[in-house]
Image 1: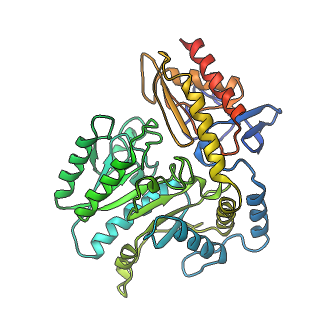
Image 2 (image 1 turned 135 degrees about the horizontal axis):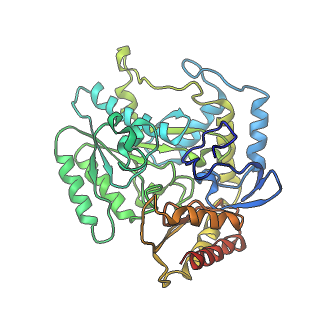
Image 3 (image 1 turned 90 degrees about the vertical axis):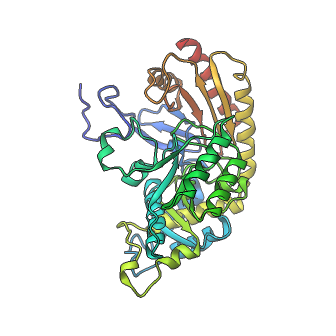
Length: 419
């Protein structure tokens, strides 16, 4: 039976999941349905909520900004929240990222990054248009984002729209050198504009982790061959991997970096793409044809920028890193019980992100076990959205060890029931 609602939900097969759960409110790490049922948000509502739902400081900033300015065109105009946020971002991101371009989502921040890279080379008069990307990566659902992401079930219907990229093998354990050699060989060829990577961990590609030294080597190789290095920190930024930004762990400054999700603490949609000064300078000209032609109607929305500024104030005024360390310890403790458990393989963690794979006859995003796992968690009041047979947890930083223990207890029980 078709759903009664006219709403078409993302990543949802409505023939199998006809009715959506209606949420009335959220607070801290918890959501509450219209009928009063509480659900622990173990994935931060698609990885965006950092400090918890409805953090009072962010809520106040949104209310205050709404009373002053709600929206203004950002072409030829500016406003205080955007100016303040841009300066703060330049101050806290890796040194050398000097310019900030605003957009609305992680996908669009990647589109901006790719267009910056291609415009950079074109405006310099160099014929470089080839993009390198890691196998298994996910960079969003816009055309550019899908093009540099893994080809498969996510984007197969749209293949005629996508541009070709050169794939770099994921640096899995024992194959690290093959990855670096492939990047080196690719960069030696003429025409390579940029390499784009999710630093330290693939997100929707299966929560696959690789070490910081690999990230550093990727950047070194790109630098040696004059290839731009794009870090997609949409998911990895804002403390998820244990540091404010994942690139810090490799002491890497990307040429272009994408940030979104936790930028506003999960309250409002906003994204930024930061770049080196010479990339901005390549578009700075009295020749209007060298303008960076990208925008959206809500670029640098003042209310969203005010929320992001409030988020950064929380990082400065509250013990966020201590909370991240506490969540990290709780995740490590929870995973320990499964490290020798034959029901699971590839038990892994980086910072506050924990993941493990359920041993199943089929694997991958469309694994039949995925919906059963999801339903099992939901019946226990837990929002966990497995990637096929991969269970991952990415909770808000306000989550307590007791709350996380209940999730690991559920993993144990559900795996028993499915097995």
